[in-house]
Length: 509
Image (cartoon, rainbow, N blue to C red; front, side, top):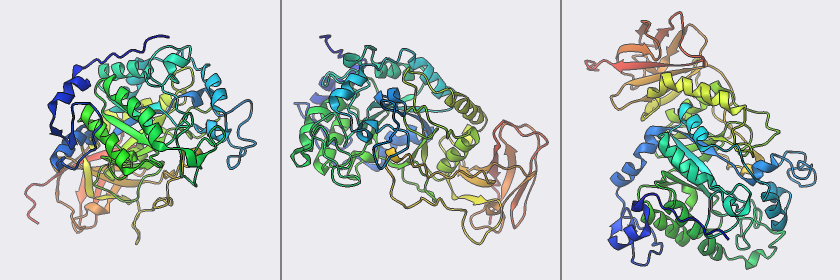
């Protein structure tokens, strides 16, 4: 057996360097044994803001769903989902081990064919950087229990179990550092179909458990799995791969509050600056997660929308619903105007390269950001996040799925708005400048009622410029609206344009 690599590139992340401190740091007490302490509530708001500062500035990250389900690519033994309700007639998703009730032994045999010879971490990182993405979140372990890194604590991993024999997370961590991206790591917490001790309760008792191999749901003890697999693997992820910007947990399911606290304590002990999402459970995360939907209203608390570029999270050869660059920019600007980050998902092919459909879309979004990033990076919501193109007695059209419970990923339910109606979004920067984002706007004049001099909170403006254009603009601010005439030539290829509005500092109103 090959001895697992225990390379720790940065000594600052070794337990030996941290344990002797014996102090409370960022809400955690560290002891001599190196065991994971429970998180305490001593972190100040200023400390939390400092940890989140880079993430709030970034606004845009890349989600990577990749694994054995990519090898299946939507089918299992020639079938889609023909015999497995409630998914009958639909392609298999990332849940295909559950959907087809594949025994662990058969799944392990299938996994031995995973050999992504086209994987190139530098290409992934460079593609993300050129698309204007600032961080990358990689699925280290999904619900099937397969580790896409060299796990010393569990041999069901890509190095020990497949002919690939390489650690893609190691290579990706190094590539992210070279290309200026923050590394994020996804870890399925409350579901693991490879382990006998993982009960679930969604949508009903045992609804997301492996009950075909391990039918005794009452005999499953989550803490056995937690101690045997979760804590050792999270320790590996936080000590072997350098600085981790985000630890992105999924599906807390039946984790107890004490276990969530212990897990957060381990994170704070090993990497105090790492931020954690809310799916660690029990309201202990640093930011909220919105899956396949964008809220209707702005929220100043940290939150992130995770959305798919195609129909599915993982690669699926049947995918036929790729979002256009215009739609991606609309979703990004809507999210940022409401105070959130966008984590956009791509599922690489089993060979290790990105689907061909994703590349021109990402590149086009990157070119749009080359012109307009200042309207998003580090900005905050204005007092009014947006308005429709025409006056209406009601608010802008609401997302019909808002407020409904999030559906699970196996349903591939994408509730983001799909319309291309012209409308406006607003952000503001630290200087007080306002960015007016005219989305899908084909008319020659932009009219913003929210910036009319009689509108509540509207400032008097000194200058108006169009990002990406040196042409002078014709504009006027009346009591009713700000009206801006586009120049004869509009910059960029995506019909979403950004105007920078500098306030009149002499306005005494």
